[in-house]
Image (cartoon, rainbow, N blue to C red; front, side, top):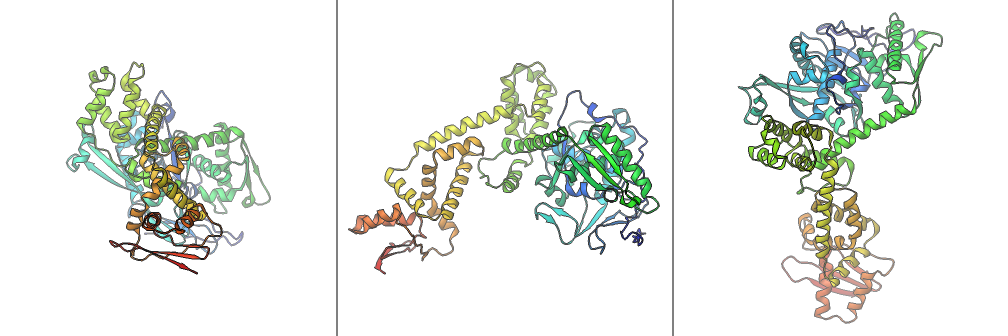
Length: 601
């Protein structure tokens, strides 16, 4: 294979990327404005990995060569770079592959952010905005693009961003963007046969997004864009420029950037002979963005040589509002995936990143619809739903995408509404989350009932006093840890976490913590390697409530008081007290009678 040589442009002291592209890619077939795909507005926001925005993973060169490897350098000593390696006999991904990739991100969102999901060529074309009359001419092209996306490998040297590691991976990483598997009816497993219920489907495509990109998409290594808007841009340069400057500016109203920096990121040709044409291409895209009202205005600043040209972009408050709305709409959609499918047998961690990790494993698990599930939901829906021949299939698809519990809750919501077209309303309620407020209200009612039950299960006065008094003797760090664990345990019992749960916890904090401490002995048994002898000494500057009570007990030690002291200590067996001039040591022995030793210091 031929490797494209990277030559240093000595005169100006920078390293050009040898990319031939100077003009937007031309696609013969006309794309529809994807905003016209449906009459009603649908959610079209997608999460795009930072690496896809920041780096030239898709070339803008319409004249790609087969077997041509391209390497992009990001520093002068060539220690940070990306190398794009096509499969033998093929070329690297370009503008059409980028369109396919954006459509796949939209489909992944619709499939509830599974890292692996099933789709069809027809579904991809629909999300790309290709007119139905042109589907036939595009089938082969899409399949080639999918092969190219899966087979092209990327070598990231000190350049791949990972939100999991909170920065650039200082290593050499080889990865592709995704893996695909095309499955015919004969090859389908039992769980995949349902995708062939529609006799028109000859094959399905299983897409698996590579972990480096998927991890950023489900964490915070992404930016949110409107896929319809991106795909409506005829120029890939305009699309890349829009995504880059939105990332670079964050929420600033002005952004000044060197033209050469934009040329390298897009990428366009930065050869000394072609840089003028590349700057003209940038200016053309700036005009497009202004016409589309995606920037307020721009200014080209020429200072001496072309290589020193700068672009200054101006934004207005509405641009920040749109950007912010994108983020919150997407976040609400993603959070609703968490809420609607939480398994009550799992606890939800208190840190945002851990919540996501744990909930994705639970909430986004694959759903296999059964006839019993479909019949149960048909029974919940208004009677007219049973008369619709396509309703069973619609419910089956909904269960597979949204989960049985959520679909059932949406059906209950629909039952309370006065509607005409049941199937249409059912689909839109699922897609747009119309039932989410109702579902949360129902869940909160259940939680309040659980809270009332917990109130009835208050520990006896004496036990509560001893357990909570023990809690008060602990240092601040230990109290925070106990309270955090008690909260986690409480949320696990509730089955979800929200504002209502936090209020309920704070209202019954003393009882919940007391209840948690009662069970700490079992927790200690599971987590402690050696329980036969526990000697952890704690000193206190001031006499606490617990110490005062213990001092009173020590004035007249008898069997009854000794038993009571043991009960206190066994709640937290690690406790060993030094009170004034008395040292109290508890020797705990498994399956034997514990011993109390009291000595003067």
